[in-house]
Length: 128
Image (cartoon, rainbow, N blue to C red; front, side, top):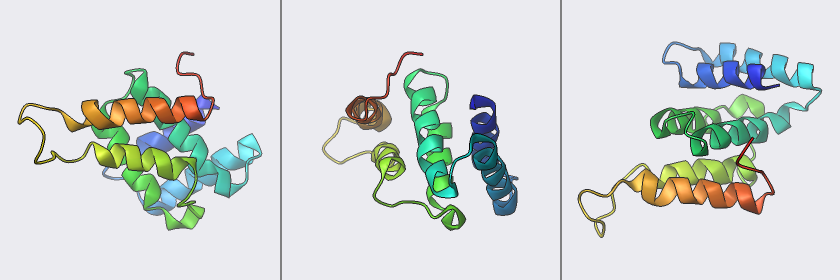
């Protein structure tokens, strides 16, 4: 299962991947895993979130992957579900707030603890 998600996330991060290539990879993954297409967003978001909190994916790559995932209307992205919540946590780390110290790092302050709390809330173990 992880190999398919690795390929999908690599495409989401790629600057050269086309929407059709990404959606074909997602459709193939769903067929292999017997998942409805609508469940792909949560599976991908869980993969990205776990890779990020385990230090196996940079904030920048995880943020790009989640932004690209949300932009894929062809997978019927659920703007209320788990993947949306993961996306919002990455979105929180994208900008410096005027009330923060200049040397603060927003993704460390907001995204990392937010993603960890979201995984915990959903009963997803962080450690393999």
